[in-house]
Image (cartoon, rainbow, N blue to C red; front, top):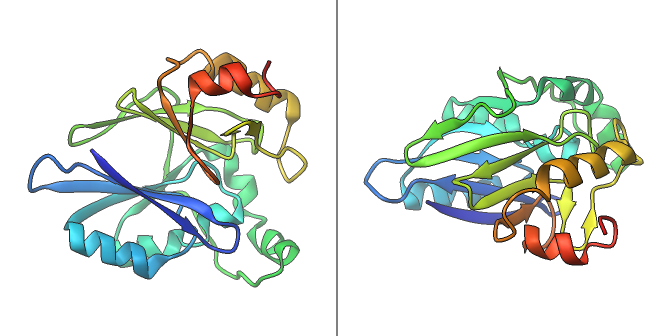
Length: 209
């Protein structure tokens, strides 16, 4: 498995391009496309990736703003948690609050089922529902080695809960009861900022001690 981390958009969302690189059939997917679409297109072309779907860790505007672009260009589906449809209905207001225009409608094509593994080549994706930052926030454990945590868990901190759909009690419960129980060596790849590990956050994250 190989992946690229592409900070994208005005809020530097970590967009991830993930694909199987062990044979000529490089099937892959994209997580939280928030911008840098031309750069990502070039990587897809240069690596000869067969893009299969979009995964959204959650549906706030900065994480879905380029969903329709990649869906249209590559003829792929958007996969996310049904509980975040309420967030998608509010995209225009979110964009206005953040100071830019967005007039598209983004729709989920396929709903995630918790603990129902998604297989793509030699890549296994386990959805873990981690509400708190939003009602449908979902973390993805890939090959039992990488955790794409969206805006739930960050290096030394946690996601905001003072925005639409947020709940402090829920995010703390999600992290402590679902994420911190994972193996300490798992690499956490968040929606913004630097990577960390489950072990580091278990020991040093002041919100979780």
